[in-house]
Length: 300
Image (tube, rainbow, N blue to C red):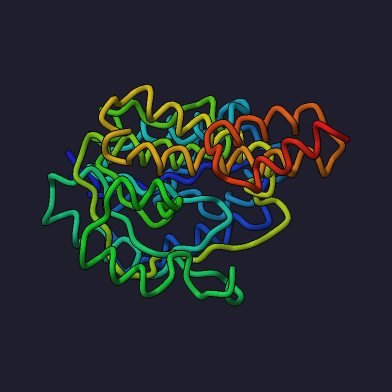
């Protein structure tokens, strides 16, 4: 019987044939080679399968399902995974050559971890006026002090493209929530933090590619799912609010409702905008900006 791989790399893809091959190449060029590669085609209607044919016969395994969304596609890939550790990659980003070497080097010596994750860079120049997704000074501080639930809650710093997850931990928390399309990584990260030790490394292990197809550009869906994920965390884990504090919870939820209200008002959805700004102002009644918009929109 052949030995099982240490890591299973899962790539879920949908209609990204023009970007996918570069992603696959970046995985195949890893310095760490004890892995399998599983690509899950989530019902693509472009030439995804044809684009992958050149990789057939190598270590790549190709799975196809009718379109059910990225969370369902990832769960399918993990169900077929043989590795003890799971690396989940987006089909439009690039792995750095040190990706698996860095993360598995730590995970191998810390088997109690549910997840270890690191930083990412922006392909083609800085994004948000910085070179890395997590600012350099903050990255060093997180690595030195340890990452806590409050760090993830304050800013969505976990990118699964920069993570290695214990398959046992992934299965124990139920994998990805298949009802989510954008905020499934944050939701999974919350559940892992609440159940297992999580570590952070100050290394850049992947590169984010900006393009018109990025799902995060759907601001309405991103914000509504973000609110759902926070409310799910608080409902599912009664200790989460105590760990985070009422003030932090209210501030983040209120800001999300405020951003949602502004977007809806901009697109002429005034009644829905008023509903959202009302939620923001109820969560943070002392925030004058929220109260101003609430009464201004109600008046006019």
